[in-house]
Length: 183
Image (cartoon, rainbow, N blue to C red; front, side, top):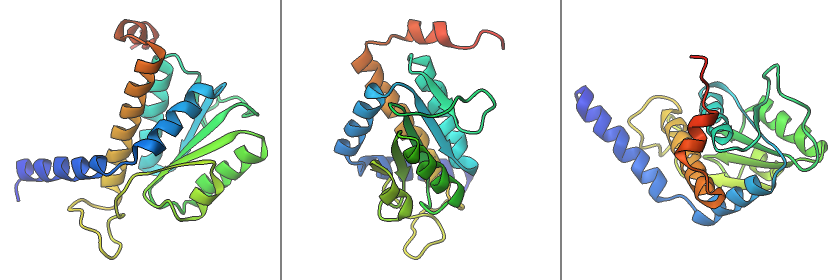
């Protein structure tokens, strides 16, 4: 395959994942975000990068959002929502963060490829990003490691933001006003 054919294959894989999302799970997460006082996100590695992008968009639409581990992230509390991103569903640090948030009275959610593992069981809400993690038996992705999950996580985050924008009546102009102007 050449680079254009790889790009086409990646696009098809993401489309297949998105086509199999559970709308009910997404709707429940949108409602939880709307009900939350503040939203915190966490993850590890490239999943964390996607969650950071999601938090940025949440801020752009007017949701008070924080990334766990940043120096300006406040203490989580009752009324807050923590959303974790974990392709494997087994990242120990992400699980520990979910457990700590729950112990502090926050609601917890995870976006994961594995809705049947410990992190999903520890969360109040689960959004399954329906794909096998590359390298496991039965994986059909042409991409290395967890790339398909991470790409799909970014798409799911943006889809959630679009749904939230509609529900909140947020315009692109309002988002632009919140976008950084120190670049």
